[in-house]
Amino acid sequence: MLNKIWPFFIIISFIYALLKLKIPELNESIFNSCSQTVEMILSFLGIMCMWNGIMQIIKETTLINKIKRILRPFMKFLFPKLNTKSKAYEEITMNIVANLLGLGNAATPLGLKAMQALQEENPDKEKLSDTMIMFLVLNTASIQIIPTTIIAIRSSLGSSNPAKIIIPVWISTIVAASAGIITVKLLSKRKEK
Amino acid sequence: MEIINYISAIIIPLVIVLVIGYGIAEKKNVYDIFLRGAKNGIKIVIKLFPTLLAIFLAINMLRNSGVIDFIINILKPILLFFNIPIEIMPLALLRPVSGTASMAVATDIIKTSGVDSKIGLIAATIMGSTETVFYTIALYTSSINVKKTRFTLVASLIANFVGIATSVIIFNNL
Image (cartoon, rainbow over all chains, first blue to last red; front, side):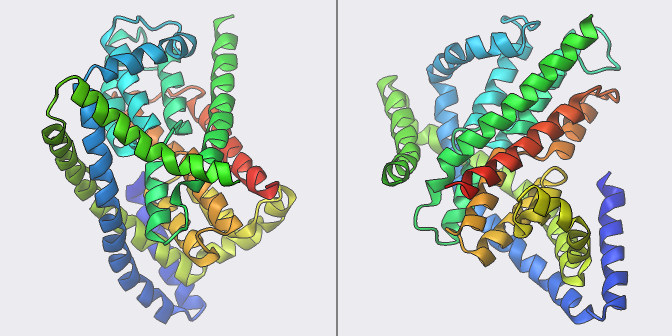
């Protein structure tokens, strides 16, 4: 999809800038983008590595099992059709843990593995199953305890308390995820009848 | 507010201490494990670089040429109706489409409006509580070659919109 959108954005910008006599600004934006990317990557690098290190400790101790046990009732509610002993169950839990810690980029490879495992159990290979949809919606609703990336950005921009947004994020992420979960529950029920 | 500030400041150090303490209690070489995990982080960030560059380029060109202002002007009445600050608009539009691009836009909004200003806090909260809907769905479904996504997009977009609205409501009423 980006193979079409990306060139379209660039070409339309050039044409619009040409018409509005904004070519110098456009030119400037190209060089800004390059230096901005480097700045951004550098500020990410530290915090991403730090959390990945902590995450690794969680994975290599029995802490991961404790977290899984705590998550079990939620998992049962969210994925009633999922076998708790299956590989998919394990992968989904790991993905949710990574998401909770705000490790979106670490969560993605885990999420892809979970999708693969779910596909093996999926009766209709052409269509997403209810479990898959719930899993996807949860991933797009970004439930997280620690919004790592945005805290990193706030601290790189000199906030007096970079973590100040944590509680607002909790509230809004819970409200958003609930809206998503309710929608999925309603729509998948309707299909069953 | 004092207490909230304090709690939010203690969460991260607390998580780190608890995890490391747990590792020690299990007699694990936490230092070695930490290094191994951190090394993985480098790979993830390096992989992100080309994408970030491509997206920044397109978004900055769109913005500096005036295309984004043009779109915002069209959508202004809808925004005002929902009480969404106009500065937030580019973010609300881009958030479901691209993670890195919306990150770039959010950073820009936070920088220009002030990192601890109301607008800056709203932008940060939106980033923290929503995800890149289109990218995530495309990536996850294409990895298993499924094209029929049924109601996934609808449910995700509802969640996303609710997240943005809630972020605005929280800070509008604080």
